[in-house]
Length: 117
Image 1 (cartoon, rainbow, N blue to C red):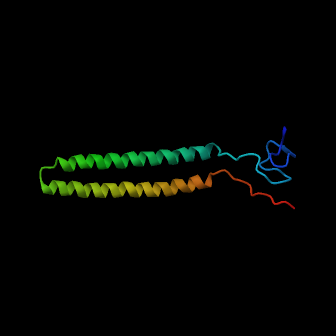
Image 2: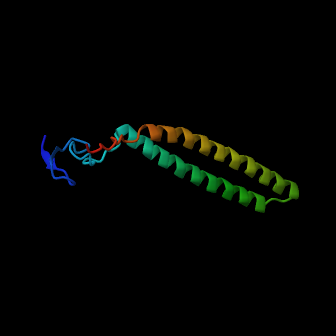
């Protein structure tokens, strides 16, 4: 393994080491693995999908409510829109909680800094 110099104390450090053995400064930035990247992009795609779904659903429901012939149809459209929006928001919340836990569990591990003796 090639040796690099520490940016803080200029001592030689392996390029695979996460931190300098003499001063404890982080040398290598930890990165997510393949599964961690997959979870991160799934989390982002899920949130974008939920946002599009919410905007599209409310927009379509407003068109139905504005073209309704009677007051009863407008009330039904408003009630259906409210129920649908709450279902999408519930799915969004629980999906974010579950994916967020996976995202938290797959984050890169940063070693704790060493203290000088």
